[in-house]
Picture (spheres, one colour):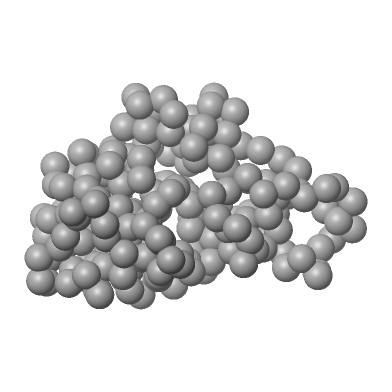
Length: 194
């Protein structure tokens, strides 16, 4: 899948938005990729996650025995990535602010895990998910996402395989360009601003 193919999927789903957005990280951006919209079509979700799976080197793919994703945004992509890889999929939740496996999900000690996200911006949620996987007994051997908004700048501490890397500017709330500051901000994501 080429970058243009990926962007075409987002455009077709009306999931490539422009305006003034507050990201999960608390940063602000003039563009937002609404993964929930692109993933609401099961066939599109499958195509995108199969595209991600194709980017993971065979030697790493062969070691993965589970996919773990952070809720809320990672639930669908985690499930679809697990399906694409033919391994179990599970998700982490933050019942009290820290990620944990719940609902009977568990990892065997040392189990090799792919951590799957929808979008990575700063990598904070991904690193928190990877830390939770370690607390739960797993070993994250790689991470993947549909979109890397950091354009390769986010360091997750493991090999990272996004479907597409984008250079989408993001700003702190007190350092907005005037054209962005003039637009009312909206919070489209699943987590309160940091």
